[in-house]
Length: 343
Image 1 (cartoon, rainbow, N blue to C red):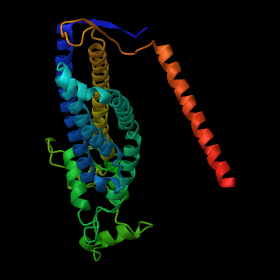
Image 2: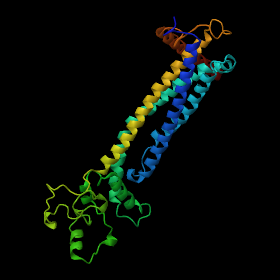
Image 3: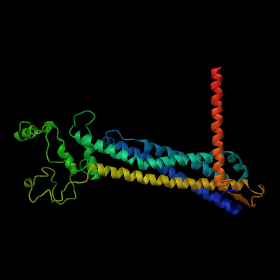
Image 4: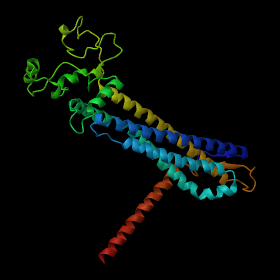
């Protein structure tokens, strides 16, 4: 007995074909959107590549671009089939392709599911890459004369301004590195010399942050130097004062940006899987309804459509039996090949 049978007459078949045609072209638009988001995600990763130490993974955006293109092709084909389904002559040429097409759609849905899972699972890899990349970016901030790092200062400053963040974890990360190049330090100055000599690694460390950490919304002029020295500023206590620099770390800000993007894309891909499943179910009903027409020459006659020709249990039993037969056939062929090789 067929699984989930439905009776159809001509008006129902027409409505089903028209509805499916619209859903298929909606799926094409969604495919274009996924493709565009994949391109956008890839560009964003390229833009922040220096912040990730050039170790970012492009697996997810590449998959999004691939599934976006496949969605456009697969659903455009399905839309054409639905458009021609009510013309017996035109539908006849598509009929042999429907079974392989539905199998292709099942494989495509599996690829979509993999893509959605990676959108959620790869966020941890992004977090780790950002943590290491930002740590190195801060370390190389001063190397404006070093080939390959000339634009690190500009990139990090623009990132801190755009994402309203400071440092890796917070602004105190700047206290642990020398972020001013030696070429801008007056080594004949006793204060500078003492500060360098007092450090084991010979670095010029200070409780200051770059200008890009400043919050322009603060009513007080930016205090970016001597942040922990209360006596260096009038009416100032760094322990209770609301600092007029960004207190949020760039790792948190960038991860929030990328994870939000990946979560949104993941939800869109899951919605696409649901849409594709509706397309597949509708096309199966339409094709079986057209095949079971009592009088194919009379379009007004009734027919019956279904999702599976047999029940779910019987269908899966047949599928497993075919897989077992295929496995045994391969074993027999391998054994025959081995015997021929031995002789």
